Image (cartoon, rainbow, N blue to C red; front, side, top):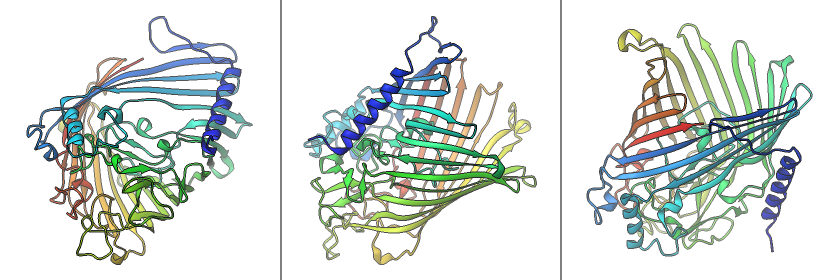
Length: 525
């Protein structure tokens, strides 16, 4: 019997395809292979895109691979290629958009070592991937929507799309409509639009000039795939699984459950956002109901509302309610733009159970977050200052350099150590009441912005550890772009060395020994 979700998804797909066919939308090609377009009085079409390649190199040895290869430093960790096509059309008052992308990876010797390690530790048996590159290869219709105006103030967009609600860059307070695909990368430079996972939505914008603002709202009717919900991490033993789990395919003992009573993908979700200007400030107020971005474990030892189908646990994304606000404005005294963002989350789920797996010294506690699920309210705040620094005399740049500093904090409200909450399942480290991270970046500009060195840094002020990303972006021509960067991490002596342990790993401890050098080349068309 076909599930209700499958029936809803098929009906939505048929409706969108029929609408496009009725509009007479067909392909167009340019003679020189560049961006193709065609226009008439009531019809226009444009096709653009890119071909892109990545190469990354390990800058450190991987301790998980010591038994197989003690010299993983200097090995290629990624050889990846992507082709993206972006089609825009206009039929009368209706705008159409379709974006498709294909991704392929070469199995480097380093990835082959990780695949061998999955066999050695037994997690390849029963896992979902026969090849480790199955984690990274993908064909996807990323966006497919139509937008129509209703009068002079209202527009409605229907289809697979992205909505951005928030101000922060490295970490997200209010930008919670969508999850992110973090499986093949995790920290190096890129565009959120390409990592964000689009959803099938009905969204609208209503301009209200009398109040100097705009009302935006969306409804997600619940026709998305399971893989579209929440953040996706590299839990299948790949290059971006957190230390010490590289080469350990967690999917051998877990499933992702999108039919859980507290996190059913077929449930309707949505939100509303008001943005406007007042007293020289830009501001917004928003409410949304969504799915928790990061998954939690529904443990077989202490099931949460439903027994898991996985051997040890299922990954679930319980629903949350978020109330948020942003404000930004220019400070003449600092000659900078100051921004603030706040998000109050009701019923943020956390796993329970600090300590090592099946710790005998803690009665009734199985450790590493497998002791159940508990919900707490949280308050996430972000303070930001953006400023153009005049470094022309010091560094000889061609114009002032854009720089930004962000202070990001998440507080667990009503925090009680007796709740025994963990920071992340598969680790026995306790969650702290505050988690505070400071980030900063600046970009230098030379030769009319064709040569752009940059530097980003982040520090965990609560637990220690951080990252640094020196980079160089090059515009080689109108079509060719290049970038090189080093992603350097340090764990602040808080990193697990043993799987399923209660060692002191916190966020940057997860990235211990993951430093890398990344090259990217793009051909736009």
